[in-house]
Length: 529
Image (cartoon, rainbow, N blue to C red; front, side, top):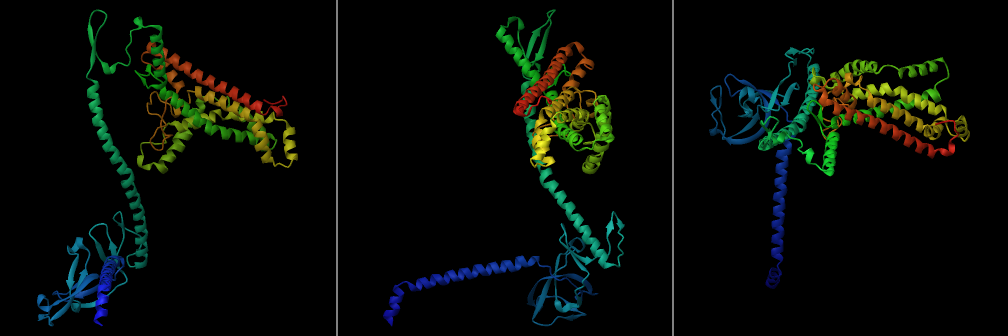
């Protein structure tokens, strides 16, 4: 027996069991702790019943409303309560912690009470618990709802209607609160972060401005007077009389590059044309995206689907007449319909917080592009319809005879053959739009707009922004410049650039049209172009 116990002891089995017991005890304590935390913590979210009773410990008794939060047993000697002058009896007395809420009214959130001193205890169904953003819970009965200080339509005696009204208004308040928090957490936070960055950049800007004003140069002018000029105000310095041909060419290319890539200065009489080039390109590109599908679809309908009759004939005559309408008329239409009507309605629906300052109800890139799209739409329609009309009927008949539908014939046979004409119409539209000035003066172009309509700030393409245009730039230099003699070289250079752009567009149309003709050369009958 002793040998068995001694051998069992030497084998180390007692230590194994001891470790197992310690581990089991630790696990039991861990699970017990988790159970305690879960019961006390997660149970907090369960809606507890709220009682209403008369508390007899006070003289006279008071009505209390609240929920039981905790309870304990204490010695009667620790309590000083009495009822009608009679001291409490008993060695051990149970008391409960009542959560009264309404801290902003009573100043106390909790109070210890004796359950034996509660009289007429009840749990009314109409008793409401409110979880508030401040001051904790609130307990009470709903007796009315106000809107801007005025009672709502639901009568106070109709508890069900009042409760439904309150729930609807709570849902509305939650939605508005979510929007407010979204703005505060994302937009306002980004703005604050950006403002801090701007503050640091401003400090750096001030330091750079201080440094850039450090240097100045003294020059002697005709008559012997000396003038001091800040070096920061000098764009370029060169001595033309001492230049070699290579140095002169280098300066010429630098000034030409500045002309194409820099912002204008000195009332547009010097500097570059980058905002005007950029604005012209963006307007023409956006106009092309708008006018091409509209013009092609209209031409296809008139040529392939519209019934042959007087109405179609009148439509064609109207389209041809629209091509001859003065461009200023389109500008007046764009100002009245797009800007004042459509733009004003967009501002009212989506940008009401910015009113009375307009967002889209003012001239901008979008309205200028739409106006020029309407102006050039007849050109695209006429050119595309002529191309469709010149395609031999045998191609249509052959495709239909092989079992293709009318749409398949149009999509796979007719439209590919009409691409040269569609491209011709588009290039003619682009060339005309690039040179128009009169309508743009009403719907979006300005004398100076250094900010480009396309940048890295969301939404990247700012359709509501005003822009510069090469044609208006030439007009402004030639007629509105305060120093005409100084502006004329810049005006000639800008006009040359505008003509070069239009010529390049037309040349590209000729080249692309020739390539398309070569592609469909096998189908060329000599009757379409």
